Length: 222
Image 1 (cartoon, rainbow, N blue to C red):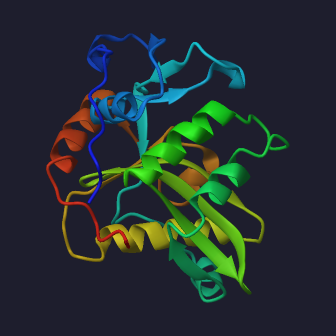
Image 2: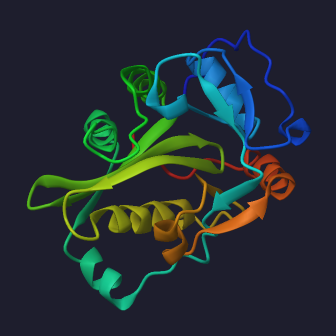
């Protein structure tokens, strides 16, 4: 059972009052602040990968992956047989791989990594990992609150490994038959679109979020 941290001293604006994706600047990355943000449909990202002040976003056009709309090609289904899916066994390594400074458009700073490590310790952040021959080959991490999983980043060291991790995540979110869970991917990229990600208006996302937060969490191990 996740541990609820002290509440945030910061008040986030209503995303519906914002004219663009950026809704605020400042605050901190304490666990209570992060959870308040996600429950409000907002997430943090450093501006151009620099240190504070932190920037907070709620995209006008929000990316989600409908759980019944994940596109699993025949080749990806074959690839799934080549990996073992594990959950929360290498969270820090997944975040470190996602934050590799050699990756293009890297934005995961030490402060970000430390903040999500603390959320993981409290039971709110999770990693889904694709292992091959006993080695971590790919994975993703994000924040789980009730029926919401807010994906943050993914990486791969072997072909299709991050896609396999996404398949594993969707399987987990659907494993107990609870309908209405929400898989948030922030913005739709061509890569995510090829896997079934779609854009929804911010108001629609916030409605889906409100419903998802009332649902039970999926059966996270541990």
